[in-house]
Length: 239
Length: 239
DNA sequence: AAGTGGTCTAGACCACGGC
DNA sequence: CCGTGGTCTAGACCACTTC
Image: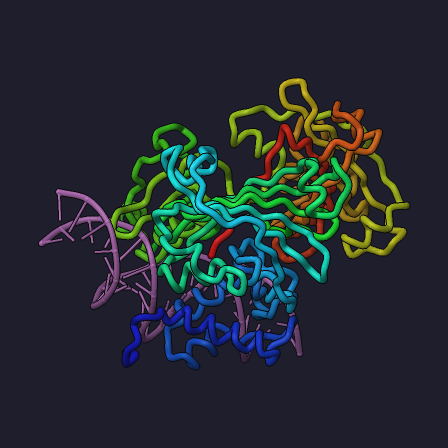
């Protein structure tokens, strides 16, 4: 029925239009979102399609649905369980991302990182170590590894001003899929303590993240160390 | 069309039948699951219903779907982003749950916990403090709070042998919905260090969990402290 | 009673992967 | 080519909440 543009699924167009109105402030937390039936008429799609759009928005925590009542814009707490770059996370909280690159070179002596990416132990890897700031105070040390062969010339592009996710998606046509994260607590070693400006042995949050492409190939391994006084991890679990 | 049992949705029955075959070992990781079309014929439902069953199983990490290829039993890593009791988590890893109750009384001087449950500061709360073990070694200290008025007689029921989730769902007809968790790192205080058998100031994982009912009412507030050498938190994020 | 989300039907076409 | 999952239709009835 619809004229064209099969390139973007209808349910994603509906989601975009809702997200856009939330971002623009036209829809505020607690405000009702159009009902399934209204959305279906408005976008000229069937009920199931409008429903699919709202259902996945709910799992992202953007919207809350109550049977018999309606769908409402969720409190903007956090984008639950959403894979986002540091830049995107900061933007979602209306903050600007600031970071300092400590290390950016090709290495071949990190067999552990290579193994996590399912590469041979001596494979050449791009290693990128960055210190994340918020209002002048450092709060995270992130080290990420990528296959050097998979992303030629990455180190020559300006990494400073742009999000790594954005570069990968734009320049290398990468489609990010999901990430598995293992979280635990660790004590600050001397170098980390100095970089993060905390005492030695301070408890820190450690997140080891393996980011997969949309077709299930491991792309990036990220080791993140976070000051737990300046950063909380928030997730939502479902029954 | 379908004869009866509107009580349980068809897509949940399909999920149960798949889960059952996985639990029984008839389906092992990597094995193909019946396709959408086969499931639809087998269970005499429409394609969309079979599809819904597989789609939500995928978001739980139980199954992996590959377009053009099929649906396969996922590696039994972890039940991603799933709200489960300690007992259920242990069972999922084929371990037995062991815990010791340190404290189980009604209190009225915990305004912080009351506030999180949206109750008045002096409201009477059931406070339950438990030490979790795995193979003789303690690894977690969990303190949970519930409204005393909401769950009369809970302290009289045998909490030792049964999962709290199971008691609430069975005896109080509670429908658990989801949980929001805030995760950070903290240092062991003297009492916690002794209980968990670790040095003082040891980095520990702290999880503050607010469990909601299916209709969005806060039910339980849980403060958990975990030995990070014996417990990892694993989550999955989606793009 | 009216409106909402939750489940479901019986089909359709498309995009993708493997043979 | 065929089978797979991904999107979509044009309806339907149910369960729930609010008025």
